[in-house]
Length: 102
Image (cartoon, rainbow, N blue to C red; front, side):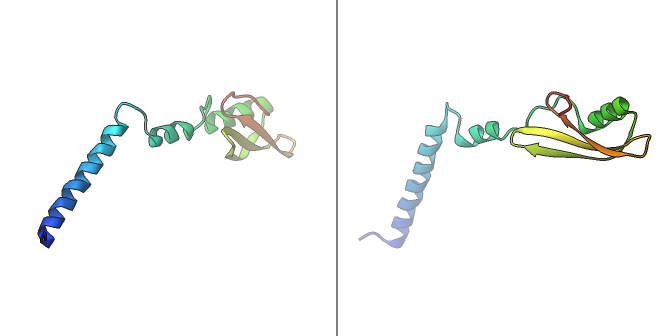
């Protein structure tokens, strides 16, 4: 009958051996973490929130009073609240990927 020490030694080598086998299987191909990272990658932005604010202020000759970024699925949209020269407050939405107003 094997002593407790012998059993611990065998378990340790088996455990280490199993881990190495798993690592060998992952070499040479993308693992799930890499795939998930690619799928969860941030959408491409053509312009920043600051650039979108400046664009809206120029276009409408108004002053931005609030600006925020909203995500709709894989799309980023900037919502900019503007104060017009006539005192009217209105909101514009600009797509971050295309730079176009919605």
